[in-house]
Length: 465
Image 1 (cartoon, one colour):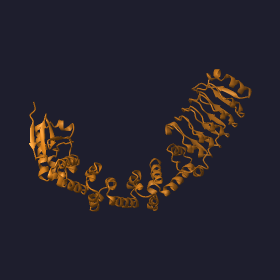
Image 2 (tube, rainbow, N blue to C red):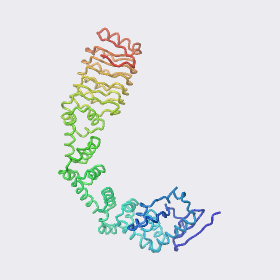
Image 3 (cartoon, one colour):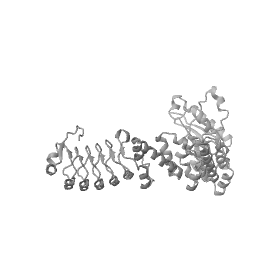
């Protein structure tokens, strides 16, 4: 049976080796907290740690193979590890519970527990240690203290004093990816000055024109720290050219975030970019704009102006994988051809009926189960391809398509056709499958009498006019 060893540092703090495991006891009660022994500092690298001021900083440079599963690979005897912990905590106690000598996620909870249990030294230094480490400028420790709400251990008056005397210089020397989150956390924890400094830093970084920093500010919504009326002023003289030189996949999200943050200039630039794309006729980019809903937030009139001269739009599955169409599709009132073949669309928005200039609509190879009644508003439509969907019925309004010449319906699950289909006075050809003949025979006969050519296609056949 493993032997039990005991090491008493003082009246309040004791370590015990029990069943091969080191346990910490505070005032006789076991203290359960993550703890590990950092031993693996190679002799030839000791000089690298000369500038380190705390175990927290050392932990980032060390090969932390002594943690978790790695510690078993080194096969440290439990007794050796026990005496290592005893030595660490002995030094910690002899240095007046200096939290730099232990990892913060052990030092602060243990120090607080000791203070709560009546340890006079712990009671005296606990708050001092929090203030000292907050002013250390070391991001991980500051983040830990703020996340665990250690500032709430102080009265409002004490917090005001801490905030007033807070030394921001170590934080301001950090790179922006560490500096900005820390300043925001400090502000959210009650350090009011941190917000003023954060805003000042944001303005400085935007003015610098450094693209990486600007992208970081935009993506992490740091502009939200300013009132809306200030945001546009901040970006008034902002040079957008670095963003505009990015590809569309990076450029558009950044401009949209800026616009959503209240930067009106970004909105103007987006409109200009959209117009440029429409004019170029790059339909795959227009599909990208629609799919990712970049038109949301623009009025119908604005969208109408953007797409004023656009006549043809083709979207394909291999590029877009569309499941729905945005309502804004209905603003493309100059559109003459819309090809949505081979996507995963299940329903169409009612706004599709606004495309009154549309002459050809290809919805084949989707998963459409119903068509909106507004489909009947497409009175200029000459060709409608509904092949390979999951349609069981067609709306009565289909009979309003008086310009329709070609209608492709196979294969679907249609059992009947609406009587209004007889109103398709311009219909020249109706494409059906062989199996549709039995269920739709009455309709077929009527259409034949009207001079409509009924063409039977096998599922594998391509459409022909």
